[in-house]
Length: 313
Image (cartoon, rainbow, N blue to C red; front, top):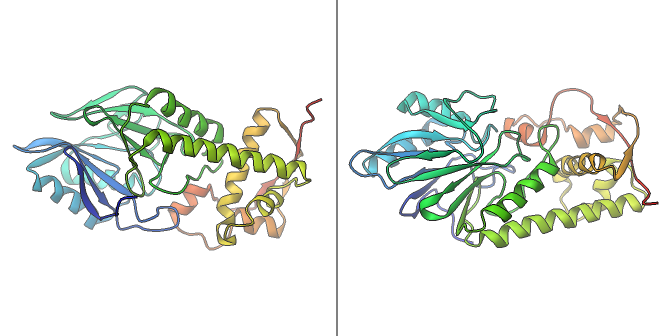
């Protein structure tokens, strides 16, 4: 793992500037990228300006000016509050248009679909639709350097939260398989958080293997008699700090929804959560908008169901 620096040139065409927003969901902070060599006033792209932090946005502008470049385009991977909001302010500061998935619900000027190209004088990005972590998630492939910008699909270290109702585990797994099958020529991954990854294929397979192993654990817990999200979390996350169990609970919910869609589990009618379940699924005191968005937290009493494996016979 390479040493993480707040501002670093990673290649002839890529600089990384880390936003000052560290946290449990953002690791050491959101990675913003300047893409393009610059020089003679040529345009560069900024990918994921991050949250609306004025000092960080000013650093992005200054970094472009330092290479005699102009910010000509702002590119967003998805609309979570640690990735998008700075784009709106940076647009005001530079006049550069904002490019994002065409179905994104935040303001953007250039609507993108899977396979669409974005070009500057020396850089070409290809948009790759990769939902799962978020419904509007795009990865981007830098043709000139065989580099993948993966947003929150793949991180520099750790795993990704996939939390209902906007997170979808089946879509997330499909997106990982899509990168594995269609973009295996990538030589480096630049994630939305954490350091760069020098062996993309190994990292993608690691992510897929982790999800497969966790699903197997969940099915084993159901076979052993667990039937609710709380019971499954207690069974398979025993070695995880209980402070992280709300995030684990949302992951379990995503797996169970996928298994229900696959007709591998049957479910009971909804009921109101008990006090213990409410604390787990919707813990009081989470006011950080990033945590709320990542975990699908919304005000109100949670509804829960019980789950049972469908007999193979």
